[in-house]
Amino acid sequence: MILRPFFGDQGLNTRTVEAVWGFGLGLDVGTLTKEGAMKALKVTLRSEEGKKMRDRIGVQRELAYNAVKPNGSSVENFKTLVKLVGNRLTLKHQAN
Image (tube, rainbow, N blue to C red; front, side, top):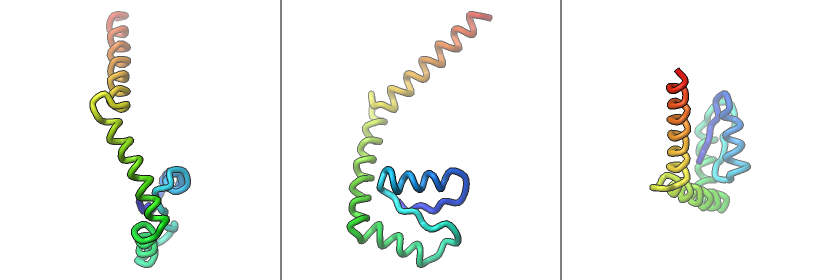
């Protein structure tokens, strides 16, 4: 993943993807250049560091895929949220 932060929390997100998750490369802040983009592409596509990034993102991809499968963690968490909101609305309706 090649990142180019522009504003807001994008700088923090870029640093998180680079340093914490280890599967991204942030471009320098400032003017986007062809040279900067080419350098980032070479790192991500041709270097050993890039191979490690691709391996790490593969693990994250699998986790995300499993989370949205039937009975996955995201699906179950969404069901819990709907249940909590529904219960809250029912209680509010009964109070009126």
